[in-house]
Image (cartoon, rainbow, N blue to C red; front, side, top):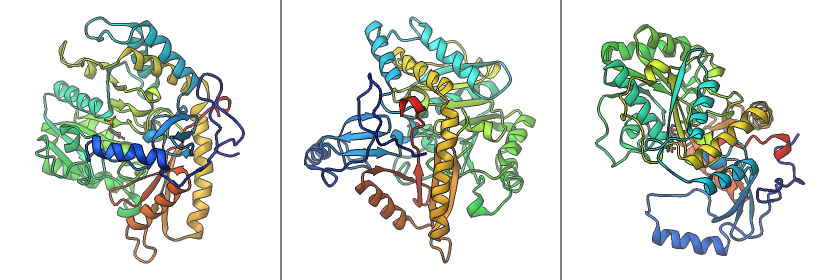
Length: 437
Ligand SMILES: *Cc1c(COP(=O)(O)O)cnc(C)c1O
């Protein structure tokens, strides 16, 4: 089984792009270079890019640039186009909805597709209890709203986030995010009442899940106190922080502590959600039932949409008019989400992500066995990573990581790096069904 069937094209309806890696110039080619030079002149310098191309089309798992280079996409726009880029059913749903109406503002005049997305989220997310949802535009906005809801529900203010956590780039989510460069440096002051504790990073802390949880919970009790704590927020598998999979038992222990102290446990599944990890949601892998779950990225195959889903009594804590936004749950984005969710559920994408995970793991494990500079291969499903280290000391090797990523990109393979120490290459391929390969 190969990740890309070299002979297939995407079916009619999407751009019929050959699923191949084909370079006809060095990157960037002259057309891309001209556009990137205009980008430098026109676009704020803070908006960086990692792949030196200007995209003209993307279909299935390839990206086509302005010079005719076809790149294999192992990043999926950062875990977004999980169903494949320009998935035909998604593109058709977007076109049909755009022709019907593009916007009313759900808070002014509601429509069914928003309700359908909420029903799907309530049904698909883990947790055997009555749930409700609210929709927003981005992952950061979902996280902001989950915190608002938890604070209103508990009447408390403090929030705990974890080392290596990433939750977005708005003011509150910068405060929740651990890493200074490039996300926070110079952008403070940050929102108050946010506290950070160590999580579980088995390769680097060597702790069992129970010991890592005891360390975190003891700090929370001593330095913050459960009485003032509204919520604990964590990514079940940390994304930007390095695809860190917590040791067994860690998340369960944190969840049961939260239950015992009436603290809202929020799973940020913005990156791990929607079949990415070989489960519909990563919380299922660890057997936990979060009180609230934030989603975005993979939810709508590239349209801006995000959700907060959770226990109905918590979700209903906010007063009428306290949640919302002009565009949140936009009808075109909801149409895209319903088509994407249909693919996740009915095209076997959870199983496909498991298969992709098995392929990635066996190849990366073989590389690790042959080369001690790969310190660890980890992840679940179509969310796998390799961490690069100095074999003598185990110290993170960011320079090697950057060199490997550069070499992949120069060969026409889109890979992304991540990690607090910049020493992780992450793989986030799409999980196409057999029929949309
Ligand atoms: C990407 C990400 C966010 C932020 O989402 P945006 O849509 O970029 O605002 C929040 N949490 C996690 C875990 C993410 O990976």
